[in-house]
Length: 338
Image (cartoon, rainbow, N blue to C red; front, top):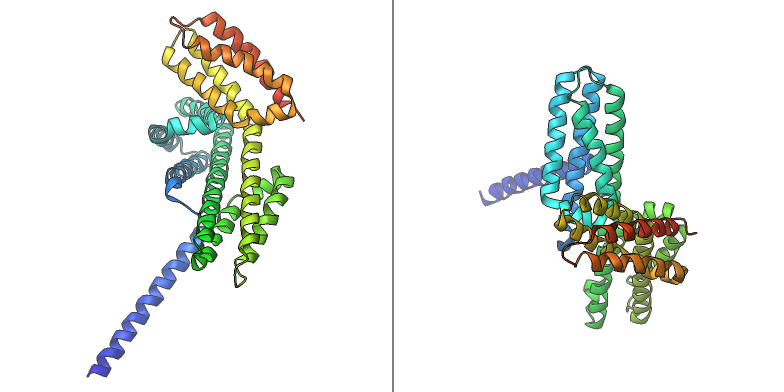
Protein backbone atom coordinates (compact mmCIF):
# COMPACT_ATOMS: atom_id res chain seq x y z
CA UNK A 1 0.00 0.00 0.00
CA UNK A 2 2.82 2.38 0.84
CA UNK A 3 4.42 1.60 -2.50
CA UNK A 4 1.16 2.35 -4.30
CA UNK A 5 0.76 5.63 -2.45
CA UNK A 6 4.34 6.55 -3.21
CA UNK A 7 3.79 5.75 -6.90
CA UNK A 8 0.65 7.90 -7.01
CA UNK A 9 2.51 10.72 -5.30
CA UNK A 10 5.35 10.55 -7.82
CA UNK A 11 2.88 10.54 -10.72
CA UNK A 12 1.08 13.57 -9.31
CA UNK A 13 4.34 15.35 -8.66
CA UNK A 14 5.55 14.59 -12.17
CA UNK A 15 2.33 15.96 -13.65
CA UNK A 16 2.68 19.15 -11.61
CA UNK A 17 6.26 19.64 -12.75
CA UNK A 18 5.27 19.07 -16.37
CA UNK A 19 2.44 21.56 -16.05
CA UNK A 20 4.73 24.14 -14.48
CA UNK A 21 7.29 23.53 -17.21
CA UNK A 22 4.70 24.10 -19.94
CA UNK A 23 3.50 27.25 -18.21
CA UNK A 24 7.04 28.58 -17.96
CA UNK A 25 7.71 27.81 -21.64
CA UNK A 26 4.51 29.56 -22.65
CA UNK A 27 5.45 32.57 -20.54
CA UNK A 28 8.90 32.70 -22.14
CA UNK A 29 7.43 32.43 -25.63
CA UNK A 30 5.08 35.36 -25.13
CA UNK A 31 7.74 37.60 -23.62
CA UNK A 32 9.73 38.52 -26.71
CA UNK A 33 11.15 41.76 -25.32
CA UNK A 34 14.29 41.38 -23.24
CA UNK A 35 14.04 43.04 -19.83
CA UNK A 36 16.90 44.43 -17.79
CA UNK A 37 17.74 42.57 -14.62
CA UNK A 38 16.02 44.36 -11.79
CA UNK A 39 17.44 45.53 -8.51
CA UNK A 40 15.26 46.95 -5.75
CA UNK A 41 16.23 50.49 -6.73
CA UNK A 42 15.08 49.93 -10.30
CA UNK A 43 11.49 48.87 -9.58
CA UNK A 44 10.16 52.36 -10.27
CA UNK A 45 11.91 52.60 -13.64
CA UNK A 46 10.59 49.18 -14.66
CA UNK A 47 7.08 50.44 -13.93
CA UNK A 48 7.80 53.28 -16.34
CA UNK A 49 8.53 50.64 -18.97
CA UNK A 50 5.25 48.85 -18.23
CA UNK A 51 3.26 52.08 -18.37
CA UNK A 52 4.83 52.98 -21.72
CA UNK A 53 4.09 49.49 -23.01
CA UNK A 54 0.43 49.80 -21.99
CA UNK A 55 0.15 53.10 -23.86
CA UNK A 56 1.73 51.58 -26.96
CA UNK A 57 -0.86 48.80 -26.86
CA UNK A 58 -3.64 51.39 -26.86
CA UNK A 59 -1.96 53.22 -29.75
CA UNK A 60 -1.94 49.98 -31.75
CA UNK A 61 -5.63 49.44 -30.99
CA UNK A 62 -6.53 52.94 -32.18
CA UNK A 63 -4.65 52.41 -35.44
CA UNK A 64 -6.56 49.16 -35.98
CA UNK A 65 -9.85 50.94 -35.27
CA UNK A 66 -8.98 53.66 -37.78
CA UNK A 67 -8.17 51.04 -40.40
CA UNK A 68 -11.52 49.34 -39.71
CA UNK A 69 -13.37 52.71 -39.81
CA UNK A 70 -14.65 52.24 -36.25
CA UNK A 71 -14.89 55.97 -35.51
CA UNK A 72 -16.84 55.65 -32.25
CA UNK A 73 -14.27 53.23 -30.87
CA UNK A 74 -11.46 55.61 -31.84
CA UNK A 75 -12.92 58.33 -29.62
CA UNK A 76 -13.35 55.87 -26.76
CA UNK A 77 -9.82 54.49 -27.11
CA UNK A 78 -8.41 58.01 -27.30
CA UNK A 79 -9.97 58.70 -23.91
CA UNK A 80 -8.34 55.52 -22.58
CA UNK A 81 -5.02 56.73 -23.94
CA UNK A 82 -5.36 60.07 -22.15
CA UNK A 83 -6.38 58.30 -18.94
CA UNK A 84 -3.38 56.00 -19.23
CA UNK A 85 -1.08 59.00 -19.62
CA UNK A 86 -2.68 60.71 -16.63
CA UNK A 87 -1.99 57.63 -14.51
CA UNK A 88 1.55 57.63 -15.88
CA UNK A 89 1.99 61.30 -14.95
CA UNK A 90 0.44 60.95 -11.51
CA UNK A 91 3.05 58.37 -10.59
CA UNK A 92 6.14 59.38 -12.57
CA UNK A 93 5.84 62.98 -13.79
CA UNK A 94 8.65 64.45 -11.69
CA UNK A 95 10.91 61.46 -12.28
CA UNK A 96 10.37 61.64 -16.04
CA UNK A 97 10.99 65.37 -16.17
CA UNK A 98 14.15 64.99 -14.10
CA UNK A 99 15.54 62.32 -16.41
CA UNK A 100 13.97 62.79 -19.84
CA UNK A 101 12.46 66.28 -20.03
CA UNK A 102 12.68 66.75 -23.79
CA UNK A 103 11.28 63.28 -24.38
CA UNK A 104 8.46 63.99 -21.92
CA UNK A 105 7.43 67.03 -23.96
CA UNK A 106 7.70 65.05 -27.20
CA UNK A 107 5.22 62.56 -25.74
CA UNK A 108 2.80 65.27 -24.66
CA UNK A 109 2.70 66.97 -28.08
CA UNK A 110 1.21 64.11 -30.16
CA UNK A 111 -1.05 63.17 -27.25
CA UNK A 112 -2.67 66.60 -27.43
CA UNK A 113 -3.18 66.30 -31.18
CA UNK A 114 -4.70 62.81 -30.82
CA UNK A 115 -7.08 63.98 -28.11
CA UNK A 116 -8.35 66.84 -30.27
CA UNK A 117 -8.42 64.94 -33.58
CA UNK A 118 -10.40 62.03 -32.12
CA UNK A 119 -13.29 64.42 -31.38
CA UNK A 120 -13.55 65.75 -34.95
CA UNK A 121 -16.09 64.20 -37.31
CA UNK A 122 -15.30 62.91 -39.82
CA UNK A 123 -11.97 61.73 -38.47
CA UNK A 124 -8.85 63.12 -40.09
CA UNK A 125 -7.17 59.74 -40.31
CA UNK A 126 -3.98 61.16 -41.80
CA UNK A 127 -3.43 63.48 -38.83
CA UNK A 128 -4.36 60.77 -36.35
CA UNK A 129 -2.10 58.12 -37.86
CA UNK A 130 0.84 60.51 -38.08
CA UNK A 131 0.43 61.54 -34.43
CA UNK A 132 -0.06 57.95 -33.29
CA UNK A 133 3.12 56.88 -35.08
CA UNK A 134 4.99 59.80 -33.54
CA UNK A 135 3.70 58.94 -30.07
CA UNK A 136 4.65 55.29 -30.49
CA UNK A 137 8.17 56.31 -31.55
CA UNK A 138 8.62 58.54 -28.50
CA UNK A 139 7.27 55.88 -26.12
CA UNK A 140 9.62 53.30 -27.63
CA UNK A 141 12.52 55.72 -27.15
CA UNK A 142 11.47 56.22 -23.54
CA UNK A 143 11.56 52.46 -23.02
CA UNK A 144 14.99 52.17 -24.62
CA UNK A 145 16.45 55.14 -22.74
CA UNK A 146 14.99 53.87 -19.51
CA UNK A 147 16.39 50.37 -20.08
CA UNK A 148 19.82 51.93 -20.62
CA UNK A 149 19.54 54.00 -17.45
CA UNK A 150 18.51 50.97 -15.41
CA UNK A 151 21.09 48.70 -16.99
CA UNK A 152 23.97 51.08 -16.31
CA UNK A 153 22.88 51.67 -12.72
CA UNK A 154 22.52 47.93 -12.15
CA UNK A 155 25.92 47.13 -13.66
CA UNK A 156 27.67 49.70 -11.48
CA UNK A 157 25.84 48.33 -8.44
CA UNK A 158 26.89 44.77 -9.32
CA UNK A 159 30.52 45.84 -9.71
CA UNK A 160 30.42 47.34 -6.23
CA UNK A 161 28.92 44.12 -4.91
CA UNK A 162 31.61 42.05 -6.63
CA UNK A 163 34.36 44.16 -5.09
CA UNK A 164 32.92 43.54 -1.65
CA UNK A 165 32.71 39.80 -2.25
CA UNK A 166 36.33 39.69 -3.42
CA UNK A 167 37.45 41.61 -0.34
CA UNK A 168 35.48 39.23 1.89
CA UNK A 169 36.76 36.17 -0.04
CA UNK A 170 33.20 35.06 -0.84
CA UNK A 171 34.26 33.09 -3.91
CA UNK A 172 31.02 31.10 -4.10
CA UNK A 173 28.98 34.30 -4.52
CA UNK A 174 31.26 35.94 -7.07
CA UNK A 175 30.34 33.69 -10.01
CA UNK A 176 26.60 34.16 -9.50
CA UNK A 177 26.88 37.90 -8.92
CA UNK A 178 28.98 38.37 -12.05
CA UNK A 179 26.24 36.80 -14.19
CA UNK A 180 24.15 39.91 -13.60
CA UNK A 181 26.65 42.02 -15.54
CA UNK A 182 26.05 40.21 -18.82
CA UNK A 183 22.29 40.00 -18.25
CA UNK A 184 22.05 43.74 -17.78
CA UNK A 185 24.48 44.57 -20.57
CA UNK A 186 22.54 42.43 -23.05
CA UNK A 187 19.38 44.43 -22.34
CA UNK A 188 20.78 47.64 -23.87
CA UNK A 189 24.11 46.88 -25.56
CA UNK A 190 22.69 47.04 -29.12
CA UNK A 191 21.85 50.72 -28.69
CA UNK A 192 25.31 51.44 -27.32
CA UNK A 193 26.98 49.55 -30.16
CA UNK A 194 25.05 51.67 -32.64
CA UNK A 195 25.41 55.09 -31.00
CA UNK A 196 28.69 54.78 -29.08
CA UNK A 197 30.74 52.13 -30.92
CA UNK A 198 34.11 53.08 -29.41
CA UNK A 199 32.77 52.96 -25.86
CA UNK A 200 30.98 49.71 -26.65
CA UNK A 201 34.33 48.08 -27.37
CA UNK A 202 35.78 49.55 -24.18
CA UNK A 203 32.97 47.90 -22.20
CA UNK A 204 33.32 44.54 -23.90
CA UNK A 205 36.99 44.09 -23.02
CA UNK A 206 36.90 44.25 -19.18
CA UNK A 207 33.45 42.64 -19.14
CA UNK A 208 34.83 39.67 -21.08
CA UNK A 209 37.83 39.47 -18.76
CA UNK A 210 35.56 39.36 -15.71
CA UNK A 211 33.35 36.67 -17.25
CA UNK A 212 36.42 34.53 -17.96
CA UNK A 213 38.22 35.23 -14.68
CA UNK A 214 35.34 34.16 -12.42
CA UNK A 215 35.49 30.68 -13.97
CA UNK A 216 39.12 30.15 -12.99
CA UNK A 217 39.92 28.29 -9.77
CA UNK A 218 41.45 29.65 -7.64
CA UNK A 219 40.18 33.11 -8.49
CA UNK A 220 42.75 35.60 -9.73
CA UNK A 221 41.54 38.46 -7.56
CA UNK A 222 44.13 40.86 -8.95
CA UNK A 223 42.80 40.43 -12.50
CA UNK A 224 39.23 40.73 -11.25
CA UNK A 225 39.92 43.86 -9.21
CA UNK A 226 41.67 45.54 -12.13
CA UNK A 227 38.88 44.68 -14.58
CA UNK A 228 36.15 45.78 -12.17
CA UNK A 229 37.78 49.18 -11.73
CA UNK A 230 38.29 49.50 -15.48
CA UNK A 231 34.70 48.55 -16.32
CA UNK A 232 33.31 50.91 -13.70
CA UNK A 233 35.27 53.80 -15.24
CA UNK A 234 34.05 52.94 -18.73
CA UNK A 235 30.44 52.75 -17.57
CA UNK A 236 30.83 56.17 -15.98
CA UNK A 237 32.28 57.45 -19.25
CA UNK A 238 29.27 56.02 -21.06
CA UNK A 239 26.86 57.71 -18.66
CA UNK A 240 28.60 61.04 -19.24
CA UNK A 241 28.57 60.57 -23.01
CA UNK A 242 24.85 59.86 -22.97
CA UNK A 243 24.30 62.94 -20.80
CA UNK A 244 26.41 65.00 -23.21
CA UNK A 245 24.21 63.82 -26.09
CA UNK A 246 20.85 64.47 -24.44
CA UNK A 247 21.61 67.11 -21.79
CA UNK A 248 21.82 70.21 -24.01
CA UNK A 249 18.40 69.53 -25.54
CA UNK A 250 16.89 68.85 -22.12
CA UNK A 251 18.29 72.20 -20.97
CA UNK A 252 16.86 73.96 -24.03
CA UNK A 253 13.47 72.41 -23.29
CA UNK A 254 13.72 73.59 -19.68
CA UNK A 255 14.48 77.10 -20.96
CA UNK A 256 11.37 76.96 -23.15
CA UNK A 257 9.34 76.08 -20.08
CA UNK A 258 10.93 78.90 -18.07
CA UNK A 259 10.02 81.41 -20.79
CA UNK A 260 6.48 80.04 -20.84
CA UNK A 261 6.02 80.40 -17.09
CA UNK A 262 7.84 83.72 -16.74
CA UNK A 263 5.00 85.58 -18.42
CA UNK A 264 2.48 85.35 -16.91
CA UNK A 265 4.63 84.52 -13.92
CA UNK A 266 4.32 81.14 -12.26
CA UNK A 267 7.05 81.42 -9.66
CA UNK A 268 6.91 77.79 -8.57
CA UNK A 269 7.29 76.47 -12.13
CA UNK A 270 10.07 78.91 -13.00
CA UNK A 271 12.01 77.88 -9.90
CA UNK A 272 11.50 74.17 -10.56
CA UNK A 273 12.68 74.35 -14.17
CA UNK A 274 15.59 76.52 -13.10
CA UNK A 275 16.62 73.75 -10.70
CA UNK A 276 16.38 71.24 -13.55
CA UNK A 277 18.71 73.39 -15.64
CA UNK A 278 21.41 72.99 -13.01
CA UNK A 279 20.71 69.28 -12.63
CA UNK A 280 21.09 68.60 -16.35
CA UNK A 281 24.16 70.81 -16.63
CA UNK A 282 25.88 68.98 -13.78
CA UNK A 283 25.53 65.71 -15.69
CA UNK A 284 27.69 66.81 -18.63
CA UNK A 285 29.47 70.05 -17.71
CA UNK A 286 32.79 68.26 -17.16
CA UNK A 287 32.65 66.98 -20.73
CA UNK A 288 32.12 70.50 -22.07
CA UNK A 289 34.84 71.95 -19.86
CA UNK A 290 37.30 69.35 -21.09
CA UNK A 291 36.44 69.80 -24.77
CA UNK A 292 35.89 73.55 -24.93
CA UNK A 293 36.55 75.64 -21.83
CA UNK A 294 35.47 79.00 -23.37
CA UNK A 295 32.12 77.44 -24.27
CA UNK A 296 31.86 76.09 -20.74
CA UNK A 297 32.29 79.62 -19.39
CA UNK A 298 29.64 80.89 -21.82
CA UNK A 299 27.17 78.49 -20.19
CA UNK A 300 28.17 79.27 -16.63
CA UNK A 301 27.55 83.02 -16.91
CA UNK A 302 23.86 83.07 -18.00
CA UNK A 303 23.10 79.92 -16.01
CA UNK A 304 24.43 81.59 -12.88
CA UNK A 305 22.36 84.67 -13.66
CA UNK A 306 19.19 82.58 -13.93
CA UNK A 307 19.96 80.70 -10.71
CA UNK A 308 20.47 83.98 -8.85
CA UNK A 309 17.50 85.78 -10.43
CA UNK A 310 14.92 83.17 -9.38
CA UNK A 311 15.93 83.71 -5.76
CA UNK A 312 15.22 87.44 -5.90
CA UNK A 313 11.74 88.53 -4.90
CA UNK A 314 10.00 89.68 -6.94
CA UNK A 315 11.55 87.65 -9.77
CA UNK A 316 13.11 89.87 -12.42
CA UNK A 317 11.42 88.55 -15.54
CA UNK A 318 13.50 90.63 -17.95
CA UNK A 319 16.84 89.45 -16.52
CA UNK A 320 15.76 85.81 -16.69
CA UNK A 321 14.49 86.12 -20.25
CA UNK A 322 17.71 87.79 -21.46
CA UNK A 323 19.89 85.19 -19.74
CA UNK A 324 17.70 82.37 -21.09
CA UNK A 325 18.09 83.59 -24.66
CA UNK A 326 21.86 83.79 -24.23
CA UNK A 327 22.06 80.32 -22.68
CA UNK A 328 19.88 78.82 -25.40
CA UNK A 329 22.27 80.05 -28.11
CA UNK A 330 25.27 78.63 -26.28
CA UNK A 331 23.56 75.26 -25.88
CA UNK A 332 23.06 75.19 -29.64
CA UNK A 333 26.82 75.68 -30.01
CA UNK A 334 27.40 72.72 -27.69
CA UNK A 335 25.04 70.58 -29.75
CA UNK A 336 27.09 71.46 -32.82
CA UNK A 337 30.37 70.45 -31.19
CA UNK A 338 32.14 67.57 -32.90
